[in-house]
Image (cartoon, rainbow over all chains, first blue to last red; front, side, top):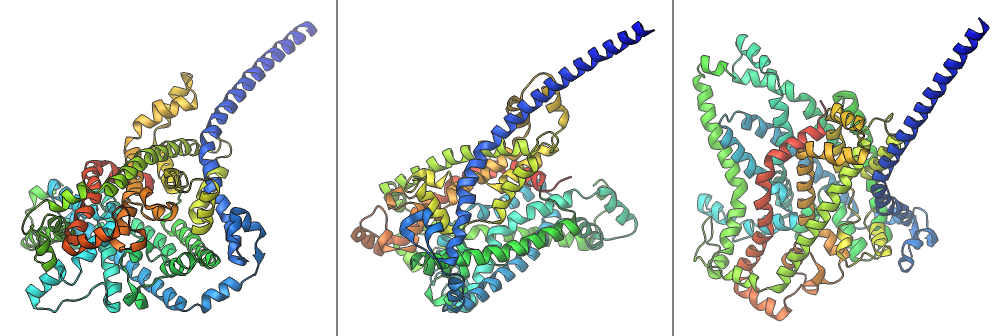
Length: 327
Length: 300
């Protein structure tokens, strides 16, 4: 009996050792594989560290009287002035106006870019000829791919005093030439509508995808219940789009301080500063044009903090109501 | 829908469809009018352009503006810089994006540290140091005035990485597992198994990167000290904003003379030429990017 027992124990010990060995090898193997994965991440980690994380120390500039001659080292050695730069900004001439303009422009852009793409995707969905639909889509996507330098150049030509917009309006209604880009009242409208021109087609992609993923059985059920086209849209299509609509709306909240630097910078001029000058353009002129780098950085920090707070809230809302997780 | 064939459409609906076709055609047409107008202006005589006679068709057709642009070495030089940037920059962008997104698409069990890496990348999307610190770093790493200043700092885009990793996650796990059992390492699995079946998302991101590099003007404006290093969009920006101190290529006195004669047609020709490469590319990638965006951003 004892012999037998010992034999069993020896045998099991042998098996155990084997198992351990295999496990060890597997662990080694997977650690190696993990090593490869870490190695793949390395270039991105390094680049982001140098070009995204190191500049974050530059935020210190906002609280300093920055010594430009020292470059990056200056982040740590310049004289600390506390909140002086921020106080200077809020007392700066034109800042409050620019803050108001920014929110005003961003808000109306948000409203327009919320309504137009939904309507257009509903209408596009009713075009049953696939080839024709695709052609229209290709055309409306086009402005999305052009830079604001090009779009701005085109708009300056088209909306100029002798541009096609004015000559057409004159021919149709006998209107006097309107200076679209030089009139403070009209300028905001030009910004909003040109933003819609650039992006509405692109925004329909995601809505159209949501529409095509709606279960056809729902439409059939609605038809059986006697619903016409309008009622089908109201009771089937729109509810089917609801999650994605909520998501887009929520995620756009974070952009309330982004009125579009590229666009405004390429279109504005001195006469329209009153309504068209936004924080970004003001800071560009004062901070970079005028060499007041601390001011530019302080405003950047102010914007980042506000945006960060709004984005956090909006992601939380998106998670809560649309069950959306970014990764 | 098959039902459509059985129940004839109601009359109001048919009326609506007719109106809808007309309306959508008009919307598409309105989107195009400004481009057509600019193209026609570039092909018109300078006197017609100055008088604002041009609508949709060229008036007094000629190729003078294009001939002039063809002889403008500054234009072609900046276009070459842009082409160089698009090719090198997009390849680096896409390769880095694939390499970064793949490990992150694993579960935290398979790849320890995944969560930390993901946050590391996500934070850069929420928060940045801003323009001037960024400029100082680029200057500190001696990239100023070289093409690398336009490529390296933005080489890793958090948005694209997230788009791609969401796509990778939806791929069937069995393929990777099968390759793993056959003894393939992660590197081989990525390039031989995952990449070939991820065409839509790679094409989408490649298109985004190419368009982004081609369209960026501010980077060139910020990081290039001398106008002869400007990429095309920056060159165009300085041309359109008519900033006399930064006027590239053409001597000021010559430029003044030209702008008196036919600055408008010349400008239009350069605008059109700068937009042309994009017009040639994006329609052919349409089926990829509509698919890629939707698959990457909406999770099933």
